[in-house]
Image (cartoon, rainbow, N blue to C red; front, side, top):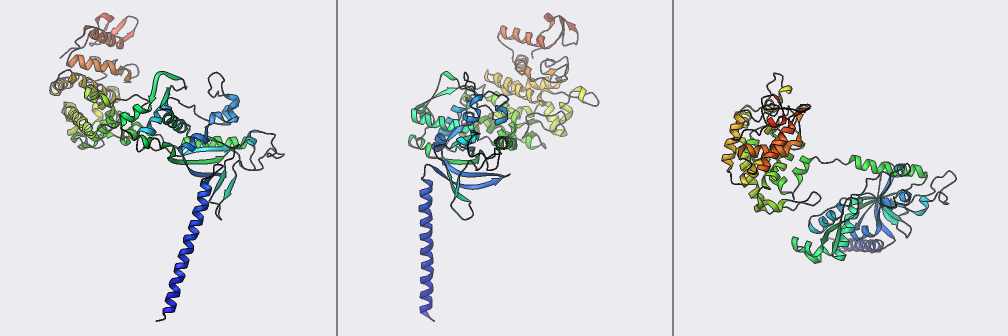
Amino acid sequence: MNTQVVVSHATDIEAIAAARRKHDEVIAELLEESIAREDALLVETARMGGTPSYIASVTLDWIRRQVNLTETMPLLKKSIDKETGKLRIDEESIEIISQRPIDWSREAVLAKYLIEREAHKFPPILAVLTQPWVDDPGSEKWDEEERAKETSITFRRLDVRGRIGLIDLGAEMRLYALDGQHRVIGIRAALELISTGRLDVRDKDRKVKRDEVVDLDELIAINGLDEAQVNQLGAERMGIEIIPAVIKGESRAEAQLRVRTIFTHVNKQASTLTPGEIAQLDEDNGYAIVARRVAVGHPFFKGLKSAVNFKNSTISARSAHITTLQTMKEMVSAYLLSNNDYAGWQFKSHELARRPADSELAKGVAAFTALWDHIARLPTFQAIAAEHSVAPYRRFTHEDKEGVGGGHLLLRPVGQQALAQAVGLLHANGMSLDSIFAKLAILDNRGVFKLDAVENPWWGVLYDVAGKRISIKGRDTAVKILRHVIGGLPIDKDRKALREAIAEARFIGGNDYRDYTNTIVPKSKISLPEQL
């Protein structure tokens, strides 16, 4: 064996490996130098639909400093109302860029989200980069035909194919958030809160709400946050994609149209989640978590095909669904909030829900399961389980070929929500579920839940007589009717108010009202329904 050849071969491999290491070290040093530059940004190039774009990872503090709101673009300054500071839509501004107005009430919500939630995440921002000459028709960078001599982004490649490089961010360069303005104001607000310790809460029009302030110390204490970690928020990184305001060869009008079209397309292609899909995915909202656990785990739903509509919030007359996930979420909220043990689950419409403890969720699931245990034992629901047919019990009389539709209150989302709230309040006042549902079973057997029957109290309340359809505006009245019929309203004022609401629902014109026997009577003759 020739040992000289083996040694030489080993030496060559070591030399190659050393050269590669040196090569990587040189590249690393060059990249580090490029990344550290304040006047340039390391990017990877992309191209779709004829528009070049440049993708980068930047810190939240960089976004705070570098990315501006679109309403501050020079192109739009003439269309900013001096009194309100808001973009005025006129014949000029509407042709320049299509931007939705900023909802400033989201500012504090997003700031708190970034600080409170360990697993926070923002999608990349889409920004447009422009320079002063772009808005100056007299600039020498426009040719005789008023077309751009160069692109508004200066890119210097760092590889042979030009996939990686630097874009210049000199003092005159300006970045504007084309998509992601709310993310920008959320980031700014979060870093302001960390820096100053307080943040004013604003309404949608940017006016400061009196006596509403977010306090950092309080936020840290309530959520048990690590203050040192909170202070590092500005160093976190997220994505940004940058497109040029003008491409070489474009006229100003063509450039504006291209940018406007990109913004429109980005928003059109984003698929909005339905309420049911949100309820499926929400891992913070306790009501949603309880609703979906019961929806997939309760024996009644498991025994029927397609019992729960997991996507939409409504149910058609012919649908095989019993309920929807969104309805169940609303039922959970209405039912559990009657018990003070669940008061901490509530949150304002613009606030972010805070996930309850697992023990609380288990308790909520048990309570909501018990409610559906009792609902499933009602005569109509037992018949549905036996026949595997829902539509005949749900359809109104005019929707049924044979004119015998059930029109059942509890097979409509608004009816299920009203039931959950009424039962919750009655149960909180000391009535057992067994007692409540014993009376509900009597009502079910008597046909009292038929919405479109004039002899029932829902006629005109939840059933729109003229339109022959459901009327959700009567939900609160329906809750009071259920409470009255099953457990009674102890306060005389409440009984009088309920009688008035029912009478108004039965108004048919002039001084005429229709009573439970389908007779036209004066308003004074409309009484409360019979109490069990």
